[in-house]
Each structure stands twice: as structure tokens, then as C-alpha cells.
Length: 94
Image: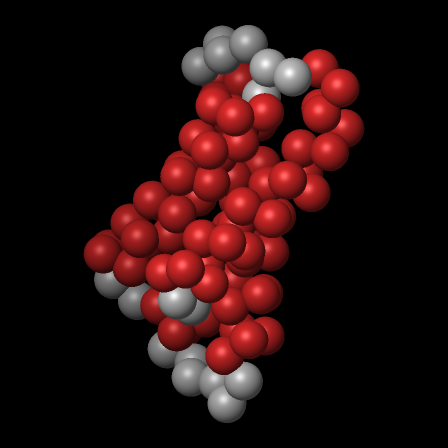
């Protein structure tokens, strides 16, 4: 694992968070659904870019790319939630 791979993960996480914040972040009635919307966006991103975090970070190749990309999307969605919490707590956003 090298710095470039971590940067790729950070970019996907930030992109996922940005899409959610810009499109649904200010819509009050969608607030309870933001984690699910974040997952949906992450799924779209990982499948569109074929972003396998298991290969990038661990070097693990899989025989079933569907599950690999789906679980990568779960990781990206959760990391984007952590990123949102970090920004709100330490940088005073919202």
C-alpha cells in the first residue's frame, strides 16, 4: 500500500460526500435518508470507476468483482460519513 492508493480512497470518499452535500444536504425531509443516499452514490461511483478498495489497499484480487465493488462502496459510504462528521465537528461546518 502506498500514498497514491490512500489518496484514491480519500478522493472517492470526498467525492461521495460532496455529491451528497450538494444535492441533498440542505433538504430537511431527506436528512434521515442521507446514509442510504450516500451508499447509493458510493455504489454508483465504485461501479462506474471500477474502484476496488480491496485491491488498492490490500492487493487482494477477487473472483467475483460484483461483491468486491459492492463492499468497496460500503466502505466509501461509511468513510464519507466519517468525513462529514469530522468536518462538522472540527472545522465548524453547519
